[in-house]
Length: 465
Image (cartoon, rainbow, N blue to C red; front, side, top):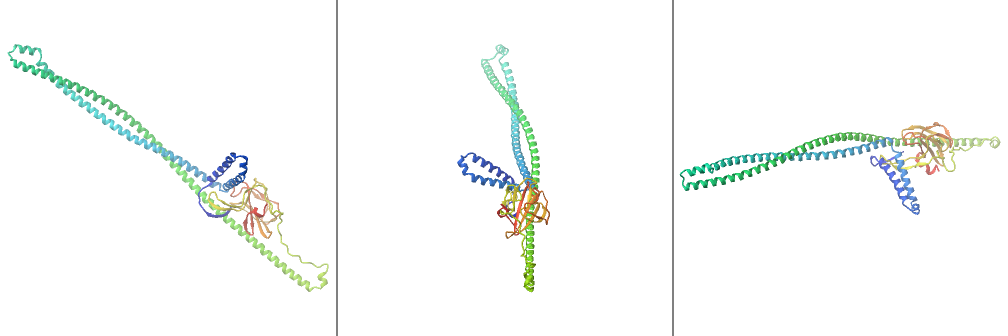
C-alpha cells in the first residue's frame, strides 16, 4: 500500500484494466476450445501465466479507490453522452443547413416563376393590343372594300357617264383593297394565335408560380422546425457539457484525493518504519545494558569468590552465576504461523497503480478470508501498536523480538476489530482479532506485513510457508 515510485501519468485507466481482464479471459477460453487435447496440454503453462495476469489486473482494480472508480465511470458516461448529443446536434445542424440551402433554392425558383408570370402577362397584354389594332384596321378596310364593290356602286357606274379608263381604275382599286383586306385577315388570325399562345404560357407561369410559392412556404416551415430541433439539441449539448465538466471536476478531485491517500500511506509507512527502528534500538540498548550488568555482576561475584575461603566457595550452599538469556519468540519448524487459512489473493511486490499510473510496492500479502474470520498471532510476542489508519484501517503490530538473528515485527490490517491491547503478551496461534474491510479496502481480507530489522520484507519469502 505504499512505496510509491515516480509518477508516470494521472490518466484514468480503470475501464481499460477491466476490459483487459474480460478480454484475457475470453481469449483463453476461445483459444483452448479450438485445440486438440495434446495442444491444450502444451498450453497449460501459458494459461497459468494468463490466469496470473488476469488475477493481477483484478487485484489492481480492487486496490483502486471506489470513489475514484465511480467518478471515473461518471466522467466516462458523461463524455459518451456528450459525444452522442454533439453527434445528434451536428446531424441536426447539417439538416438545418440543407433546409436553409433549399430555402434559398425555393426562393430563387419562386422569384423566377413570378418574373416569368409577369413577363407572360406582359406578352398577353402585348398580343391583345396587337390583335385589337389589327381588328380595327381590318374592320375599316372591310368597310371601304364593301363600299367600293357593292351592287349599288356598280349600278351607279352603269348609269353614270364614266369612261372605260375610269372603270378600269376603279376595278383595280377594288382588287387592291380586297387583297389588302385578305392580308389583314391573315394577320388578324396570326395575332389571335399569338394571343392564345401567350395566354397558355401565362397560365403555365401562373401555375408554376403558385407551385413555387407553396413549395417555398412548406420549405420555410420545415426550416423553422429544423431550426427549433437544432435549438433543443444545442441546449442539450450545453447541459451535457455542464455535466461533463462537473464530472471532470469530480474526477480530478477524486484523483487528487487518491494521490493524497497514497501520500498519506507513504508517510504512514515511513512513520511505522521509524517507530519499529526506535523500538529495535531501545531493545538493543536494553540488551546491551543487561549484558553489561551481567558482566558487572559476574565480575563482582568473581571478586567475592576470590576473597572467600576455598571451602566457602565450594560449599554445598554456594550459588552459581547463570548466564543471561535472550527471550526468543516461539516459532514452529517451518517459520511463523499463518494468521488465517485463506488463500493468497495478492502477493507482496511492485505493481502499477490503475489510476495514478505509478509503480508502487504492495507492502504485504493479502489473504482472502470471509468477514469475522479469527486472526491468529503469527508467533509469540508483545503487542506494540494498535490504532486506526485511513488507508490500512484497523492496524495491529506484534513485536516478536530477535528471531534467528533478526528483529521481527508482524502487522495485521483492515480487521473489523482486535481483542488484544498494546503491551499485552500473546502466544503463537492466539486469536488477536477478526478479519474485516476497514480503511482503504474493497472487501474483507487480511493484509499481512512483516518487518526485518525495521524494513518491510515479503512475509512469504522466509517467515511463512
